[in-house]
Image (cartoon, rainbow, N blue to C red; front, side):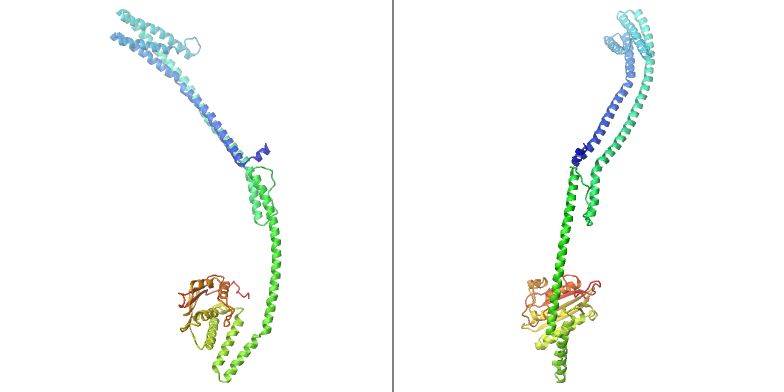
Length: 501
């Protein structure tokens, strides 16, 4: 039985549990209803004898009244009423006891029946004498019937009183029985409820315990402990199936995590080897470049050239060489670190000066800068590539005078930098390609510093850990372009810069 119970489905167990409790309650309610019904029937019959005695007394009065009415008017209708009441009274008398007994009630019934027989005999003789017009006789008989009538009524009153006393005792007894049934029914219902609770606890315990164990085990598994399992079970219900499936899942997770850990360790080792190889390659490349060009030698040479030009009164040549030295020094120095906004603006000034020397002053550059924001630090080489892009792809080779404007202002917690040109303009698809990084720096652009718009956008997003810091607007070809960079006025102090310093 225990094995079969474990193999039953949870639905079957619950149906059995609820059905057992409902069956007990139904059985007790039916039994209580039958007891109450029997007691009510007894209550209904308690005063039936008093009712019968009252009917008998009323029937006796009808006989007396109808006889007197006939004696008074001597009509056939009155005579008919007498005979009907007499027959009814005789029928009621048949219900009374006519045997000898020691029971006081039965003795009174026997007396009433015997006196009633005598009474009916005298009433019959009285009516006969009236019909025979024997005045003397029916008067005498009437007096006798009247006397017997009085005796019968007194005995009926005594019998009715006796019956009422007995019935009252029976009524009190029945009320006590009903009260006992009520109390006993409440007690039995209480016992059934208690038994039902124990049954529920017993049946649901086998369901709840595995679920509690599964919840605790699942919590441990969620914490990374794959060495725990549910207690094994051979139950054939849903809980047994879920328990076995859960243990299988934990075993599979343990195997999977072990394989994943081994795979990650191998992958980490491979990444470390690749990184080491990449570092070695960069180091070799750097040493190769350093062996080709010594920046200090170039700086000193450019400075020497500037001084020589000054000594020979070539002031413009000296300034140009000095600007070239400053611009190159800034590129090399700041290429691996951030800079202030003021330093970036100075680099743009040097760049524009160099271009105007090369192109005979064709580039008209204006700027409006809020001096309060010049100390803000930003990634280096951010403004110059954007200005260079405006020159290379905006105002170069246009038929009208090229103009570039730089505006820097503080807007709340941000700094807004706008670089506007009146050049060739851009289409919507070109703007979209630049912002989404689908445009690369051309290799054939010899006049370029090699830092493209993609590089600027990427370094801005890495430096500030935000996206969409740059916007580009253009009304179309020939209508110029405006690049807007909105950067925070204060950078998060807990974030290292993009160079890893």
